[in-house]
Length: 502
Image: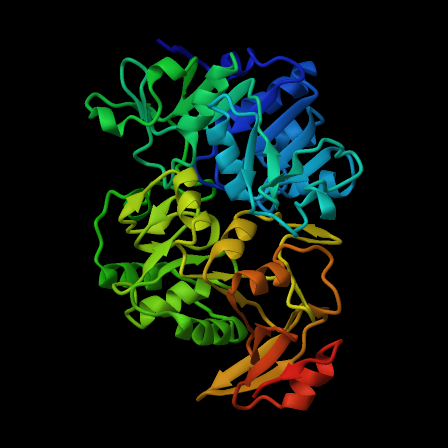
């Protein structure tokens, strides 16, 4: 039976040099109190140090100085292996400044690595990530000079090249649950996702490590299939009555946790009442054009940022009953939430673990995905994870875009001051942005046009003024919106000639 201890007592078992797995999806299912206690211990004692932190996405609350990041920013960590850095600005800064080793692996690959770490296999083998920045031919996931470990190598099987991801060996697992029963069995009824909590706990126990779980309190009655982590896989339980389901979001919202059944109309009403009071005309124009690609029966994934508006437009047009929206951390059905609650789904029909979701994605189950972009080049390649002064991280971007039948990139033509209006179907650019999105060659490859052409994917690039498609000629302009001047607003602002099929 697990021991019930304080957060500081729990983290006292963590030795110097430990390899720590954190089960979190950005602000969701985030073991904030455990991470905070670990940071406190290092600040007070200088131990444990030389840690490596492994998390399938990232953990943090989007703000510098977060309790979650203290163990890293205070100097206790030598390396981080993450798919997403945006919620961890302090960590991202340290990686960009080469102060700690930084690695960026795809979310789906990391999820499957955690699952496979429960077995006796030494590697996870897949074609996801080929010809992208994670491919050893293009850097192999290393973000800076301190990053010297080879997490990704390649292997040939029957004449085809695959990527071989090294499996993690966890010394410690930090997990957040909702409740536990008197025996220490863990449930997650108030969380928006479970991610791969069970796999992480199993992999850690298999390696002889310690599993630490924080929960809000006790539950008296439960059914066996409601248990996410059996007590036999848990070493320490920390009661944290102050924990929040979502960092930065006060209280518990039943619509996110699955305690409130909602019809499509009720979901639409909820989203409209909780959405921003002001909308950006450029982003709204992108969403209105992008939503036209939806067809009844489609399985859909929506990325963070500009693509979030597509779900809102789908709700306004009463399309939620005819499509299935999914989130890579496990939510199926309902409507993906935005902002700090991203990863949750309003009125989800089902929540599965992340590895199962990526099984579906990797197998070609997604009919269409909507995803953002930092840069697009003349060949149609996309950089969605890093720029000279910003490290967002790849997240699920690579797994999703490499395997979806249809990929719709949603982005503004430029950023940094862009102002546009759309009145009565006429688009007018009031002020151009200072940051170019379309470039001669992307700084890093998150999406490979070569891969897309070889697999027969349909690829669109939707902006607020025009639409490009991927063809054998590369980036090809196929639509110019009413009110937009082709020469002035598009061709004169591209740093390369583009094929026209208008």
